[in-house]
Each structure stands twice: as C-alpha cells, then as structure tokens.
Image (cartoon, rainbow, N blue to C red; front, side):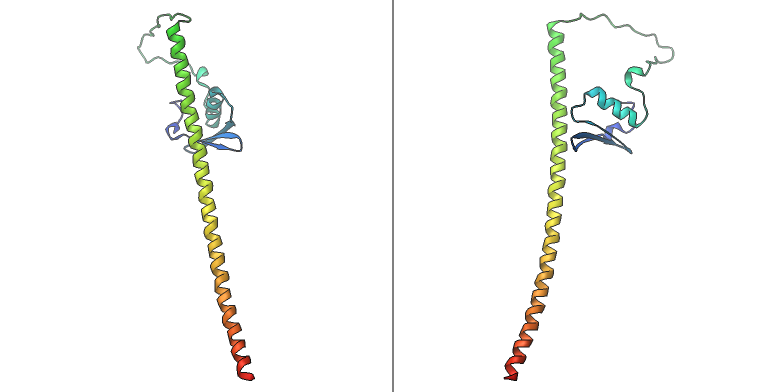
Length: 148
C-alpha cells in the first residue's frame, strides 16, 4: 500500500471488538477477524483509492515489459517458502495486535492513576474541613468551660 498517502504512520488499535487503523488524517475500522484484503479495502475506501488489483500496471515510458519466466505450480521449496512468509506475516500481525492491546491497557491504567489523584484531592478537602470542624468544636468546648 505504498501508494496510500501517509501510510508509513499507520497505527492499529483494538476497540470494541474491531481493529481501528489510523494514519495521517484518515481512519478505518474493520472486524477483528478481517482478512488482509478487507483491511486494505477499508484503508483504500477511507481515502477513496481503488483496490490494488484494479490499479492498472503502467510501465515507464519507453520501457519494454519483461515477462517473468513461468514458475512451477507447486514445488516443495515454494510451498515451504509460502508457509514461512505466511507465518512471518502472522507473527508480525499478532505482535501489532498485542502492542495495540498493551497500549490500550497502558492508557486505561493511566486513567485509573489520574482518577486516584482526584480521589486524593477530595480526601485533602475533607481533611481540611475536618480541621475546621475540630477548631469550631474546640471553641464551643472552651466557651462551655468558661461559662461554668
């Protein structure tokens, strides 16, 4: 997706059971189990680009297209390489998903710490009110002691 503007800043997050993708001024959301094709389609739809399979290949002016040598349909080496590539991609994606979960957890814990700071401020306010109350009660006690 090198033709997608700002794609190098792509971040993935997990919110409400969906994968949320953000880059530049754009955002897209897909189901957590969405295949790569659905993710790419969502990204391209967010910025109104056609899917890669619909983008025609444009050779450079004056260039002669080179046809690749036909590859055997299936060989043990190609199959093993395909599985390795697939597993490497899976591990990368799982790492990204895990990193998104960890970041979400970090943000949640930070919000909890912020809330505890607010609770501390409330406790400080009650403590100050308690000091005022005790001072007031001391005045009454002193006044009652002098009256008798």
